[in-house]
Structures are given as structure tokens and as C-alpha cells.
Length: 209
Image (tube, rainbow, N blue to C red):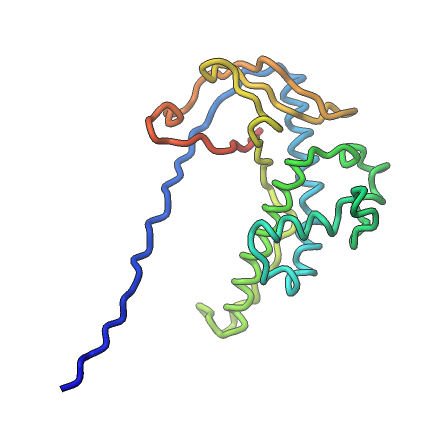
């Protein structure tokens, strides 16, 4: 009697659970206005990125997450080693949008990562629709949402600095003339204080104004 073959399956590891806390900041009207301008700048930067990534998706899709960010950055950003990027849109509009001229590098990468996520989600939904996976036969095709009401991620050391015991923060924002640091901003409360729980890791926060 022949032995039955047994297929060994690897148990999938549970994904880490991410919870959100809302930290309320104590700001002056002038500081809040700069934060609002920063969110607006980020959204203006993100919109064309979504369109560029979507147009290039067939070339980008096979890449890894890190390769994706680097590939898109090379398409749009001028450096000494990359003097002629494929898409020159951002170089053409710096006079109209001066905040783009010195756009912080980590904020640029945050926008690139977000654009990739938006396009990847759209492409997945669109392929599913093309395959006939629809709630109704007359269901319309998914649409790419380029006008995103999103908020910038703040990377530690680059866009946000934490004071002692997290009682204050410093934020890098657009002042209307330049990218500057707003320092010694008080933190009114820390939500549920999940950052103090042993084993929890503080992730990059979003600037929600």
C-alpha cells in the first residue's frame, strides 16, 4: 500500500497589531497656520506623484517595496548622479510652488510611499473588476483617487523631534517662505499613553490639523 504524501504548510505569522493614539498639541494661531500650510504643501506634492506612479505601474509593479521608492524618486528628483529625471514636472513648477524647491527628503519619500500605496490599491481593485468580481454586473470600474485628503507622516529626527518625557515636540513645517523648525511645542495629552506600554514601539506620527 502506497504512502499518502503529506504537504507541509507553513503557518502564517500573525501581523503585528497597530493602535493609534491622538496627541493634542498646544499651538499658537501662527503655528497652527504653518501646520495647515504644511499639509497643503504635502497634498500638492502627492497629487502628481499618484498620476506618475499610475502611468508607470507596469514597470514598477514587479519591484520590491524599497526598490519602488528608489525607482520613483529617481524618476522625479534631480541629483548630481541623476541630472535628468524621467519626469521633470517638479523642476518646472518650483517658481509657482516655492515649497517644492527645498521639499524635505524624508517628506518626499513619505509622499512617494503613499502614492505607491494608493496606486497599488487602485490597480488591485481595477484588475478584480476586470476579472468580473463585482457585486453587480452593472458596477462601474474603480476610479483612481488622485485628490487625496491625506496627512504627512513625520519621521523621527527629520520632521519631528521629541522632548524629555515626550512633554514637548519640535516639528519641521513650511512657514510660507522656508522649511523651518517649530520648537518647544507642548503636548497637552498623549491619548491612551500607549507609547509608555512595555513592548510597544512608537511609529512615525501623522500631522493631522
